[in-house]
Amino acid sequence: MCSAFPIAAPVVRPTSRPKRRSWRISRNRASRSQHPSRPAREACRKPDAADAGDARANGKTLALLHDVAETFQPDGALYRLDLDLLHRPLARICDSGVVEDADVRSDLEDIAARTAKAIEAFANLSWTYCHGDCHGFNARISDAGEAVFFDFDDGGPGYLAYDLSVFLWSQTSFGQRSTDMWDAFVDGYQTVRPITPDDFEAAHRFVIVRHIWLMGEYASRAQEWGSETVGWIAREANFLRRWETERCRQSGRAHEAKEAVAPAGVCFAVIALTSSHR
Image 1 (cartoon, rainbow, N blue to C red):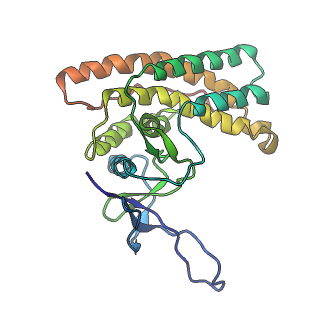
Image 2: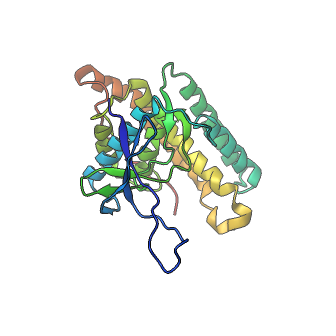
């Protein structure tokens, strides 16, 4: 089991204002003892959305993070990444008035209720300390090919399946079709640690949780950002309904079929779904 994972660290950039700080990607190792070594600066680049190696690197670093999390003792956390990520944002959407059609609101509530019930039905979901926003771009790729993580603002204790789902969501929402990158991400993760069948299947359910969370984030800021920035929310029931019927109901059967002929966690292509977002 690995005891460290690469993260980014803030460093002082020499300028005419010595007190001013900025962020530069450095390579830091966070260990179980929580005494990271001195950062060694290293050239890093932005991830390429179409590069399977970058997706694999993201999966590997997330797995290393989850390894370290097994003995991590946090002082506290702002968030718990559980079903509150579903219930609270849904309430914000309904209370904000951004979804005027009562039928659409009812659809959203029904989808959320079925999703919560399906997730609660899993008997052995893993609990860990999550990054919370591992969509593939909260990282830089080092010269060594490692994904160096940053932006832990949404992190906290929660379901491991949710942490996995964020990457899957980023590949299949808002018209994205890069499902090969999800396969590469899972492959990278499993070079470090396995994914249980329950966690793998639940990750597909958590895509709905992630999407409703984002909708709720925007809905809660409707007064600040204006109606033009939240008009897409009402249309997302189409994506959620399609994901639920075409992806979630098939993921269990497809995974079981794969399990019969391949090692646990072998990934398979995800049916590409298109959101109505414009």
